[in-house]
Image 1: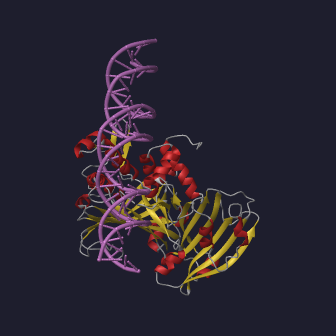
Image 2: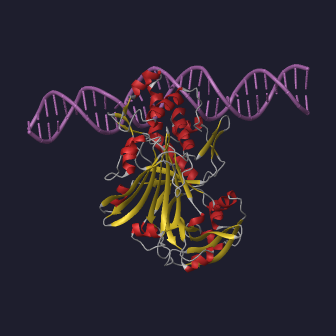
Image 3: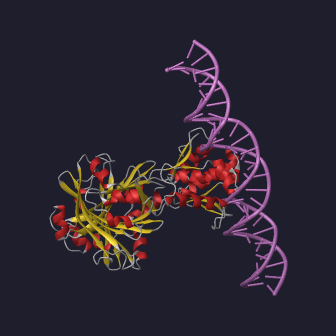
Length: 240
Length: 240
DNA sequence: TCTGCTAACATGTATATACATTATCGAAAG
DNA sequence: CTTTCGATAATGTATATACATGTTAGCAGA
């Protein structure tokens, strides 16, 4: 009855239930108390219990069935949150000076042969931008970006000489869905030279496709020297 | 579950606000109506408006400030969901036969020199397991795992000759927090031989640390030949 | 026995209300 | 002119209540 936790009733109930589930005391499939019982047990109203259980259900920890009650969910496939940082912020967090260099910029009348973008028509007009992000005096990351000019026509008139295209795009396109593919490759001769690493160095490749409500926006491929970079993904059950 | 039906007031307001934000009609920084105004506008109570806004805030679409109001969030740091699949399921989804081979299994009285595990005391007893996951007749992924015997003492008595240690652990340790680090490396001579790839091949390395409520559970490093594997992370605004 | 209706039960959604919390602004005090 | 302090505005949390919805169990009737 006396839970040592401080704070709101809501968070106290939440913490209690989470602990019981995460610790395994309540195994998957176990039925938790009904809303009315929870309310009685904690001396709160059913609304409060309902909100806690709803939140647990959203977090995927429990499953709710009408008439039957609420049950501890089966531990499903882990979904970890991968934070894709802004490159400039990432460099600065390493206490290094950030630099940006535009290497190439073309307007294409059709998709390039060396970078496939499945969502795009073969003859879609594209901007094709190659640039380099620097950390201090060393190359940090090579960026190759295609922008769909049908969705973002203004990109055709941007030089991207000073501003990284990613920054500019964020200010243009509101919210978007994204998909990331992460692979490893050996640096080709060209890549190795641009990144100033030995040829064949293992590199981390992050390919991101972005959509806005209006359609595909951009495909961007980042190449990081693998020994100097890592992505971090965290999984906390019952977060938020 | 939260797949609200079309009819409910809650979901109608939610859909409306989401559309306004995602479409860019309300750009980042824009202040949305106060709870009382929303309630008036939709003819509902403030509680209902509050729940909708709370949900949008949890989804990361808006930011709430007392006294000031609620504002459309900046679409900056993208947090994408990385699905960490079970290896066996992953292999089977490629329509290949899954195979497992235990290569080495030791009980250590102290942390090994070649695989750092920051959360663990230097003299902690560990199980050290090296195994290979096969897809068809070819090596798919090399797994090196340390298990903290203080948290999972039973691991000392498991041979892991037939069952991958990951499967066994899931049945032992209920739920857990995890952190993944993803990097790229060139295959060492030993790695290359085990994976049956040329020496120096770029490989994707996924290192996962797992905690249970009782303490650190396991550190595992998966090495995939980079040209045969990719990780996928998706980001959908307004989920959960 | 099988079917179909009903009653109950648990959750889902919504309302009105109350008071707590907190950031901000402006006015009073130093 | 600066600091402090309180009023105010907005959100945060909680309550009691009401009715809707979907699911199950059990009972009635053919």
